[in-house]
Length: 165
Image (tube, rainbow, N blue to C red; front, top):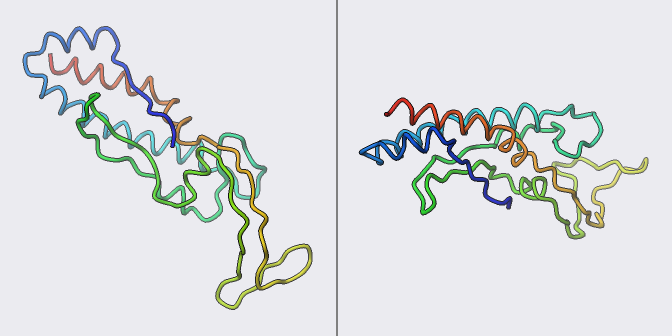
């Protein structure tokens, strides 16, 4: 799991925030702004980090499209109030999303053909093969996409607070 990323308010937004009489109004508005910016971030990650050509070379910070399962599963959680302010996340429920984001190792395992089909390795058809396991380098596609858009979050939060003053 990636480390949390914090978005800081710029100086003008902090000054406006201190002048407001009803902070709950601000938190609700910032929650909506977070949800909107998260949707833009999900689109950015899908487009720029999860849409490399399926037949291209492996990239250190992006993923090739094979089945679209992972890319289509990327979602942002609804922003909520937490101990440290407004909290939300962007992630996937696909089992292999974490190892592609952060890296890791897979254990040796058996790969079996499905639905009466066969696997083709080294010029030979097989019903099953023993995979020795592998070391997977993290691609950090979600983390990189979020970091790319941090200035957009800061700008949007500042604009939201300025509208409330």
